[in-house]
Image 1: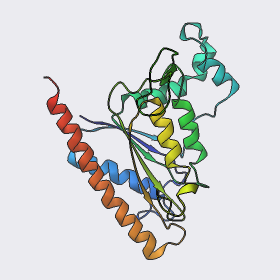
Image 2: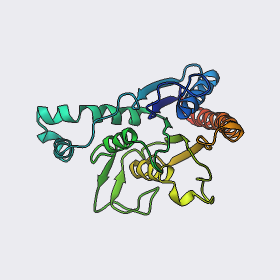
Image 3: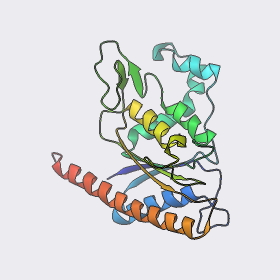
Length: 239
């Protein structure tokens, strides 16, 4: 059985194509999850809507608690870290992170950055050890990615007002969404990263429709490939 963590970061409550002024990223994540459930009915799905309920921002109290050894944590410190602990637990348990994140001003919305800041945590998802060797996914030494204990995938499903933000295209240098998310997740040990985006949102019309159709088709292919790989890995595991 596969475990999906389904996360939506758009503040728009509805889905494009179904609701007026609905979110394109919510449409993409719902399509991914629905297609996966069709192919694997017993898939386990944990859903978190950080667009509607953003995580807490990093505070001085949070920092003090996060950098305090666990045996010295006070009850107020544990309370400050409670939400972060819950978010980290969800990521640890997941096999695949399905992340719906629109591009706002060339990067992620604030709610998603708050989520990243809550899950990239010393002693929980990353550690520092002077005797540790090379990082498996990044050109870094001495940082220990604690979520590299098993294979996990991150699927970033995005939407963009403009177009040509993909690698090698004219606006690629202005895309600070996918690169920043990939860096943060690979830093903590999630080494397999996939991204699919809708473009032409501001232009609308045929260009947006074609981009949406392409994104949905790519999602279908990605779901089928990832599920096939997961099934093959499970078959190789000892009974």
